[in-house]
Image (tube, one colour):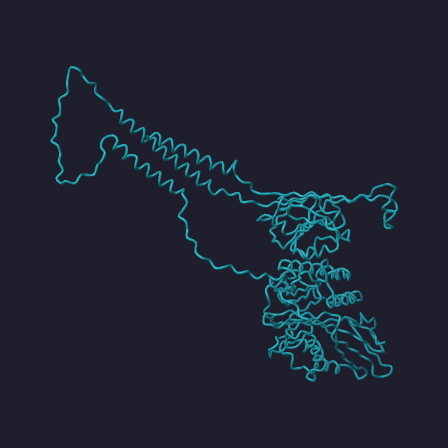
Length: 614
């Protein structure tokens, strides 16, 4: 019996260890699943839908193969195309190819908006087949711009020949593949998802097998010892000699009538007693492998639907990248005084300031000072919260950037606008914050803030009225209709070009000249207003102030110098000089029921034009 117990333990050990090892080797589940797509399409864009990327849980690893060839263009095609190469011989094929691979991902609505009317291939996941499938989507455009470097993407990648990336995108994010926008998109790619290959029972099986092996060894030793005792030394009996008989003891009688508990005696009793520890140990080992007692389920609260996070114009990482690209491009344009390059990242008042400064530099390289835009260290960012339809343009971003290399330089506020999905963000306003300016609390980047129209009734005063009233304040001072609407403390622009400064300017002119000032709000410039946390708004406006200096006596002339002379092209004029200065201003407008005044948070002033009086 003892040997049988040992054999049982050994069998259990072999089975347990074998199953445990097999679960980790030959019976181990696959670590990943891969779906490969091979295309034969001339479409320049491939879009992998977010639902396809999330067909399985976990991160998505893409392997994209480059090397595409454009459909050959024969001489017949060249004759139909007036721009075809005139030197091509009849029947000669003009073949273009590239190994370039571009991958980018962003919000699905934004990706499709960028694709627009272009023909593309849409990749989805077929639940029945369990693999990715491609279907063509018709369009009127045969090519698209190069997608790499677009401000619309959460991130983008490029490579030559092959490109491997790993992402973890939600269902509302899609991935775009292309080569250069002119040639077909990559024709082969695969998506790999990780699978749960864990084997939680293998460890318990191996441990149980080892435990059974130990118990089997113990049972075997126990059986061998018992067998040895049974085979102890024996005396040989003699036929001639008889052993003396032991006298029979008297029979024991119990004192009471109660029968005593029966207890087996002899070898059988020893076997049964020795078997008890083995069974006890076996029971303890096997009980460790049995499932625990069932837990009574307790009622849990019904989960409530989490509110959807609103869509915003850009993420924090996007804004950092956009500001960096803008700073680098503008710095290169300033170095080369290249208006065309500057126009790729500047627009509106900011571009007008640059164009005037470049024109001054062409006349005198010592003039035309420029306010550089830091390319990093975004201290504050506020993207526009998009409406429910999501894919709408234009879009705006407000950001405050700092220059870590120059601590004496005040922070700079940027107002950036993207006109359409394929356009980059361009700075329309670049303003220096006042030294003591306090930007009101703003929403986090993930929530963003909606833009208010210029005539919104949700503020103490409409943004359009703020711009017009401040223009009159600079011109008339206390005589302005809404003079008390603005806070004087911390407003250095009022000190610099207000009524007192204009009075001093008139006093400095000789009796032979006079000066007149006119202000106006530039209607072509956008008045942008972002809602703050307290219900107020930060807004930008663009004003111009024109100085007209004319002689007051016959034969007298007025002089100009510096940037005014460079732009007007005249150092002296008998007709007079007209100089126009632009004013980019950042305001804080209090909420509707507040008695707080409007504050100037920052501004930038610069000469934008100068000419002789006609």
